[in-house]
Image (cartoon, rainbow, N blue to C red):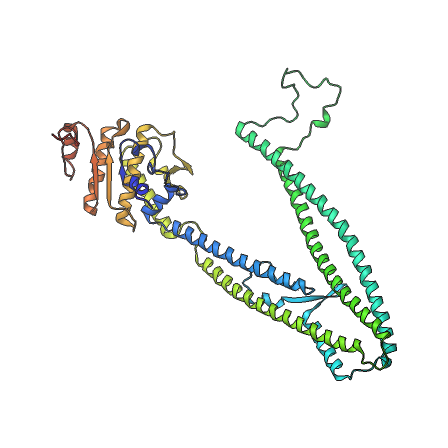
Length: 501
């Protein structure tokens, strides 16, 4: 905190110092809620420290979630290039150690999805079988090649049919999503207009009639018209209209989110079908060339099948290795997230700690006692309290403003500033133990009130504290008051600051 922001709490100057409680604190430092921060510093409250801890913890948790999302998106993009998708992986980190055990990679198999590990197991068995067999010649494989060509052709036809079906669904769903987006945009416009109407009604202090029975211009009754007015008699209030629009908007947004998720799955399926079609077309070309090759040549189809299976196995193993590395990164982030949750659990959920509440309760007691001594009479001093939100004096939850007299406002200022000083002797605070009042008898405060102020302030000597008053009161009157209290007087004849020479 800058000195300029805390000095007004123990140095009250004449020109602006008496205009505000807790103090006339400058705001040009660009410190958020500077009045609260200054009081929190002087009283050494834990609330600011706790708020800083919460903000820093929230930033760390947000960074953790962001890194989780980045790693997840990178993994999904890489897996999608390999014709698969990530399943069982949460959108954000969880503290459950078993949450990552359900995450796995799925590969498209026909119209469904098969776990990567199952595909790898099946492919490894196939490679072993292919390796165990000798490579036959073409003439021994002619019938088998013809049957396989026919089967692959049927598979291509089925995949093309499935792709056409998915494309048709995709076109219809894209049109539906565009319609939903237009509907949500229209609801946003309606919501803004209704909120503007509600805001205008709140500012004006009256509720405008949406169906007036008199003309707003000529005050003529609108009953005798050609159109019936009954249709307009029951109009939904603006507040109900806002809630209805919000519920409609939420419903359409949920539908759009579901449609977008299904569209993402369709894109994955189409991508997987396209890759399988490319493999099948290459296989068809190879099988056709096999049928017209010389009979004594080794079967190129068997050789390529073995090579293709081994290459596919290497790709899938690389995909599994990358997935395992990503899971290790997710586990590190998950452990860090669990630690952040434990750290958040150690921070009190309430805004104020028990120590802060005790200090504010003690400050309330001191303000009530001093306000009573100084003759505060607008209402009973026992009804005064210190707000836990603004740290200003309040009554029944409302800040004290123009309802007090000018002299009582000064008495309340005395009580608040002096209570902060006395609190420093009972509780650990950052108060310097000094208080300066410049012309404290503002608004022609009564002599007994001023006398009680000086008497109460003189007790600071016993607490190793100091209260300094500078005043231009009548000297004889002042001596009458100071004669009865333990204090020191410094009298300046004339102006304190004088021209030299």
